[in-house]
Length: 109
Image (cartoon, rainbow, N blue to C red; front, side, top):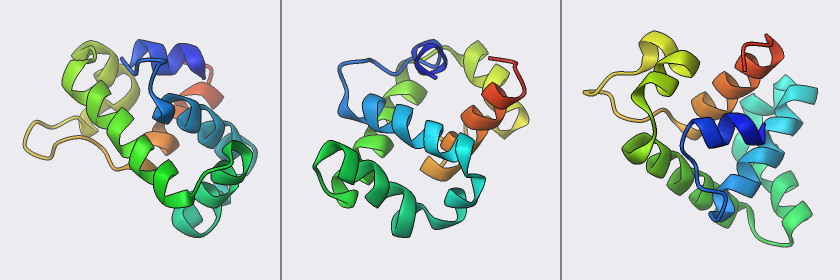
């Protein structure tokens, strides 16, 4: 997971990096969490880091924004394929977590 986040350009210094690492790991064990980001996934991550679900959500969004602005476009295409679109912008947090988890589960990461 950490290698994937590094490849996508998310700096390890960001809190969102740690939160994403945990969120992706949780989704890889229970994909149903993707349907309950704000009700289940973010609170679970928040509990593990002694913070709030709102801070987890905000930090994850910020980390994705940084990756999208500064990361490798080639890597983005490798993970997100045709969903990468300049007009559409960055993926949602749920899309990002789902695609990275799926990419890793398929052994392509």
